Image (cartoon, rainbow, N blue to C red):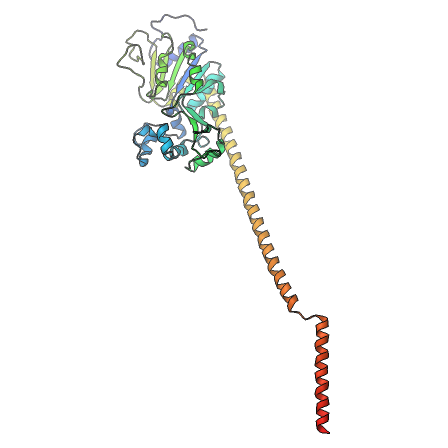
Length: 374
């Protein structure tokens, strides 16, 4: 248990070094990580709001009424194509987890992770080997899919295949739209999200990584930890700062006297690598990252090889079937020709009759010739 501290002056200074020292000095065991799209950009997945490169920007060709319409359930029901164009770029299986994803896994390995609340739908947290019990996918994920009408669970592999082709999957039972179990605007968040909100009361450290904290109710979770709990933001720019209230949002200027908020402005991977180094965990983080992604690459290659072999076998079957068809056709044609020849060929009895008639004609001709001479 962390030792009791005054609510005033929780940290020595607003730096990563101070956060690392706090973890060591207080034997911190209950860390909550809140993560957003920014932790996946290093994996090659664009975030949503970056100018020129964000996913919302890249969807302009669909003439959306507003950028977020792609995740609006009412708009999806009328026009699902933009979402599946986006899904093609986001679907799991095409991207490797980043150092930040593995840092969260490392917190579990160190026995100090209480929970990872993530806004992400890419399932990269799962792919690190992070136990499902630690993951709260606040906005759902691609891990499963269901029919929007009859609610039947769809074949996730079928949905994935179609999504990767940019096609819209439909329910096998009622032919209505199938949607990955992602929380759209206009839908309720997963029950699991609400069931674990009490975790924030138990937290000893809150780390927020790669999120603009613009979507509610996720954004307001930073205010759910007790006042004596330090909060670390790792992001490219400041987020979660409220100018309207002194009791909500971050206080990076330490104007309220709690001295608990720290902002590291830079890439998510740089931030966690530096924190891991300060904690003496850099080799552990490198090990998890290297071995984890090597394992994923090997697994994906095996799957690709298996698919290629399956396709090859299918092609061989098709070729064999084609050959069988050609042989059958040749046999049928040969049989027809033999039948025709058989019908045209004279029988032995017919030949004898023909020869007999021919001899009879010849004999008659000879007899007539003799009678004429006499």
